[in-house]
Length: 129
Length: 129
Image 1 (cartoon, chains in turn yellow, purple):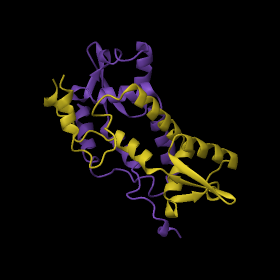
Image 2 (cartoon, rainbow over the protein chains, first blue to last red; image 1 turned 90 degrees about the vertical axis):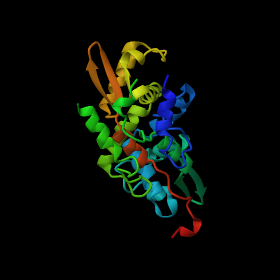
Image 3 (cartoon, each protein chain N blue to C red; image 1 turned 30 degrees about the horizontal axis):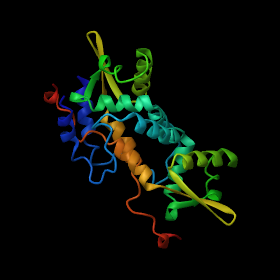
Image 4 (tube, helix red, strand yellow; image 1 turned 45 degrees about the vertical axis):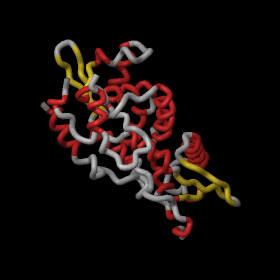
């Protein structure tokens, strides 16, 4: 099977990939379960916005006290969403005094980002077997 | 056929990110709804493996007749998962004779990949306000 040709086609598409793009070789079952869990954490608009808000906060971390304002949902709902993000390994957290602070975990984002890298170049019709 | 157009469209966003990483600026509400829908399509191990299998197939496309074998689920279940991937804009499909053929849509993958790009460097404590 000429899958190796496909891998060659894709080899230049990343400078520091931590993970092989899923377009290069079929994803294994265990990896798929693990990754689906992370994508599930991203499959909610409020959680996506929370993650983005935390990441783009000054210094890369945000106090939970700053995370409720922008959303039209209750504080317990925000806390629930933060817990889902934390359990999926996408954010870290730490209590300091009264408040809990959150920050994104770059390796987790990088893993998903690398995985989703599109083919390096359009598939050439002539490359078809 | 429109597939070649899609592939050509897709080639530009490989090196030039089509979307701003979510770690750089807070994601808007409409974008978050749209993106969450795409991540939801990825939030299932069988769908992730299907997408990966299609993408890594010779020539970048796969006949539905080749997609049932590797999975321990029924053909109707595979068809359902393929429909979810198609409706999320992650794969394209076309019937040719008896079979339907599927291929990934690189711009959609590139959009998600860019979005999840991690911060370029670890957060420096000194950078905090």
